[in-house]
Image (cartoon, rainbow over the protein chains, first blue to last red):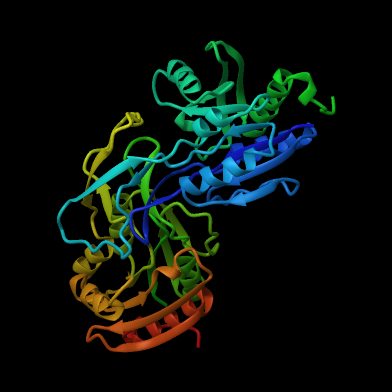
Length: 216
Length: 216
């Protein structure tokens, strides 16, 4: 049995007490992966942004709101895990300045300077110790396979799942799992549950034997 | 019986196919107002942004995503209504330019120019015909009563409900209903259902007699 960290859902980056940047990530892929991992006999810790999806009761859930909170919680949880799957879609830009009061409309345009947030999966990839593994997700609208492979290398992932924006807030997904050489080692199209099951099977197969104690 | 338009929930303003600006409005206040209005014998049309809340089955629902869509749907629905309650929190800024492909991270800051979206309640207030009425909501973090009264006048509302940011995505609300002179004509603190019931009672009381055919 492995202990697996799954990041899930979106994060929010506030401009002021009311308005924020985010994306439509629903947490369904994370929830489906957690259920598939538990079904294979693994222990699961989920670090999740704000979602309305239900997670498996057997999973340990850590709720966060911003990308920095997701980073801190994930780095800490990863210490006791064998591997991590970055299924979250953390907001990757944040306003350089956050207003403490609601920004009042003036009729003029508002210039907003956005800076990049920390990259949660890249930090997990860079900090992983001997024996730990990291699977990233890449969501791209063009040059999907190429950009996913670049991301895998930049983020020090072991594998990366490439999918498109139609996956967001949908019941369905259409993915490719790529290894470090950019080879497609799995293609799945179907419900997020079907995709999660196939992905977890493949991930488990690739784990070093000593990490495996799965029921099958 | 009156026919009442209720706007509800947040809207989304996309930067690119993935990222958007929004707020945490849940649609619970809109749903509670719809239920209270239906309970008083009114007909209800809800124009709602993306929410996970359930609306009363007896209400007619029009789903929208952006503020412009909420404006178009609301202006059209308002033509057959006696009054409107603007319980939505439409995103009030939008990027001047929307990228058709996902913006790739470069490591540099991203300068985002935001322009104001159309003001749905102000447009309803300005276009209302003889006998039609509009109730707005004002969510402010400071000078609440003063700013609400300014908003009421600017948006040509008949009444305005002033509440604070703690109302967002909460079961509770704490409101003041202000008339055109800035007088507080109702104060309610409680669940959104309790607030909605008291608000609808007060609104119905203030309606011209010929608009009323309520069961009480």
